[in-house]
Length: 219
Image 1: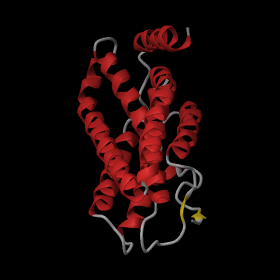
Image 2 (image 1 turned 180 degrees about the vertical axis):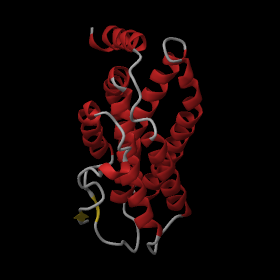
Image 3 (image 1 turned 60 degrees about the horizontal axis):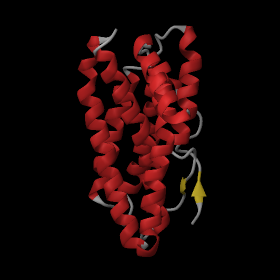
Image 4 (image 1 turned 120 degrees about the horizontal axis):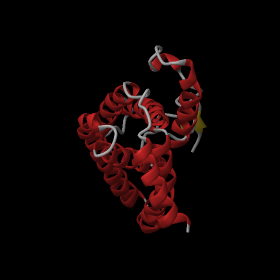
C-alpha cells in the first residue's frame, strides 16, 4: 500500500476568517497543527484502488475516531458555558450534536468495513479505536476548556482534509455512496468551525472542567 502527500499539507489561511486580531494567530497555528494530526497529516492512499483493503478502513476509522473526541469535548465545554458566562452558546449546540452524529455514523461504517475485510483483526481494531478515544478525551476536554477557538480551528482543518480524502475516493471504481455523504458533511462542518474560530474562553467553565480533569484523570 503506497502513501501520498497533498491532502494535509500545511495550513491554508485563506480558509479562515481574515478579520481576526493578530493575537489569535498562535491559536490558529496550534489549531492547524492539531487538525493535521487528527486527519492523519499528509498520509493517504496515493493510488486509486480497484478494491479496498483493510488498510483503507483502518485509516479512515483512525481519522474519524481522532475527530470524535475533540467534537465531544467541545460540545461538553459549550454546553457548560450555556449555564455560566456564555448563555448564547446554546445556539451552536445543535450543530455540534449533528457533527457528533456524523462522526458516529462514519465510525460505524468503517468498523463494519474493517470487519468485513479483516474479520480476525476486527475485535482488536475496535478495542484500539475505543481506547484511543478514551485516552485522548481528557486532553481535548482540557484544550476545549482553555481555548475553544483552538479546537474549532483544529476541527475546521481536519474536516477540510477529510472532505478532500472522501471526495477523492468518491470517483474511484469501488466507491461507496457514503463517501459522497461524508465529504459533503465534512465540508459543511469545516465552514461551521471557520465561523467560530474567534470564540472566547468561558473562564468559569474552564476552571470547572480543568478541576474535573485533574481530580478524575490526573490524581
